[in-house]
Length: 297
Image 1 (cartoon, rainbow, N blue to C red):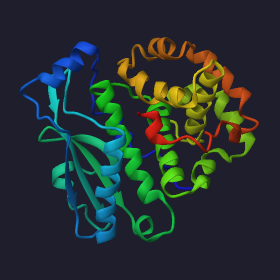
Image 2: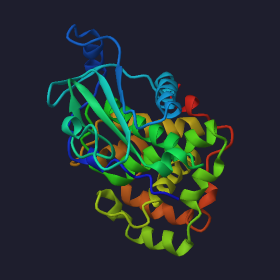
Image 3: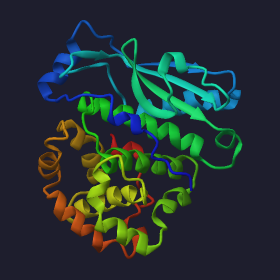
């Protein structure tokens, strides 16, 4: 399984913002902003036409499920109108490097008030039988959604940011391409590996730790199960994780406080509860009835 945690640049280019009902009202009525979230596509000739069409089609589907509006990053007062998508097949040179820098697969920077979505694809990505080329679109789209809800995303936190995006991509592949093994491959690990990862789970709060990175999907799914044991429905639990947490404006300085406010659970207590699921990781797999659109409805 190819490692899907690819948006490391996200942790270095975005600043603190907060979100409130007042700020949402302001954003919706601010005359400086366009009314619609804009996607601008820059798809290189090295891509086949089928994948070019797939990029637009999949992003279009995700827009309907997770709609976004232009917004203002409160801490910087920067206006974000939408996203500019740059995609190409990996070769000797990067055709958009002069515009977006030496990027691969990430949400990384801005061009003309649009966030940049960089999607470098390899020959194997494009022509192989795997679903990664579709999963990547859902993964990076969800990073845009994290930005939208937090109005800037000022949190360099690996397991929360990337674990959520990898969970979304897995659910997307399971639902749209009928491939449940894609999700299971994140969980079908040697129990010893998961045990060792849990023992140093706080290391996954930063982007430096990559060993056993798949544990972050296990962590997100376990958090959902814990919330369900407290009486929340499956859809409610995931909405709390994917939406409500980001709307609370978590920052590096306060994310543990926000975590407890939203989930009524100390982070350290959550880390301990992971041990309840490590011996049978597949027990945290969502039900077959779960649909992404139900989470974001």
